[in-house]
Image (cartoon, rainbow, N blue to C red):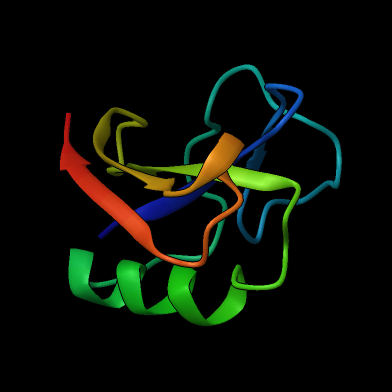
Amino acid sequence: MFRIVAVSVRGHRYLEGGPSVHPISEVPAGVGTRFLDLTAVQHHVRREYRTLSVIWRVEVVNERGEVVSRGTRDGLNGTGSRWMWQTA
């Protein structure tokens, strides 16, 4: 199971489906929207984050809160519509 941490252009990190709208410093255990695999995460990010220009990067974390993959928008200053994925 994987979760998404969205990173804003100001560097604040937000847990997808988290209990609060405030930025997080550590990924809390047991909360947030869960995805079965990386393909589901990538599909969700492409669909739901396409109009959010304030989010330029996402981190995919496992149940222990460790980053397993990162997605970064392409284009000038991360404003493109495509996402580039890399494993951590």
